[in-house]
Length: 260
Ligand SMILES: C[S@@+](CC[C@H](N)C(=O)[O-])C[C@H]1O[C@@H](n2cnc3c(N)ncnc32)[C@H](O)[C@@H]1O
Ligand SMILES: *[C@@H]1O[C@H](CO)[C@@H](O)[C@H](O)[C@H]1NC(C)=O
Image (cartoon, rainbow, N blue to C red):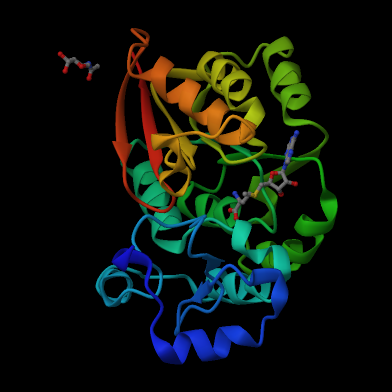
């Protein structure tokens, strides 16, 4: 697959990362946070070592200095590759401004790169309901949310996301959100989608991450339940009369769902 071929200098640096990534791993030269196995690209449809990818960043990314700090900090951890792609976060922040969003949901926060990006795009009375089961990641990001001056907009709820979404629904918050980003455990995506669809207003947007699974949706393996789950949701969404959608080959594939 030439799209994911590894330039020599990148491959050499990568060798130091050890056997855990023996499948052949890529690291963007200027964005070393972005790593994934070449046979199973995780977070990018366009190769992250590709000059075209660098060109896209050079000609579109305007990253807040604290976001950059958080990205580099997160990238230092072995699990840092779960982080959202920076161009995708910027795209969603632009969308949030476009629709003048006030209340947004994030399902799957990690260190909060995208939560921070959304908080920066929201007005001062805006709110991000940030759902995660693991507070350890968020603890790393929190000081930077504060440094950026928007921590008061991020309402972190540490418990299974389905529970938080159910609590919002039970609390009478159906049809009050403008935007939701779904980026947690893949087997639960359908459930997250259904609950978020009830929580957002007509005209609101849900962004669903990893909808292409590095190309694995083309032929989901029987034992790859995560890809199976995403593929089923993709099949459902294209026929879902409640919404209009766009499937965008950005990051690992993101579907934008517009509630009718
Ligand atoms: C891909 S990462 C999220 C990346 C993040 N959106 C960002 O901006 O970088 C997935 C996150 O989902 C969380 N997660 C996994 N299962 C979950 C669940 N049942 N409920 C809530 N969060 C969950 C994980 O702890 C992890 O932090
Ligand atoms: C949804 O898509 C249909 C078909 O393209 C279009 O006619 C309709 O105007 C769209 N609805 C909204 C609200 O954008």
